[in-house]
Image (cartoon, rainbow, N blue to C red; front, top):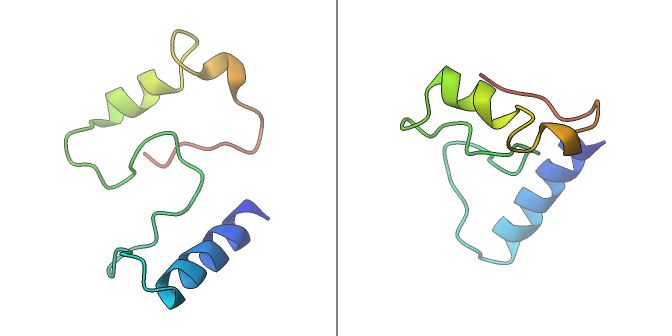
Length: 65
């Protein structure tokens, strides 16, 4: 459901002439920018940990490492 909404939000923003990335859809539910080259796979795993946001995640949040 969230992924479907992400595509709709992307298309709606594009139709309204908002600046949207042309090469990728970053409207998915991530807690970080999935294509950010400054984040290593270890950084992404750490961000999902208890010290950051881990206690607030439900089963629908995923890590795209």
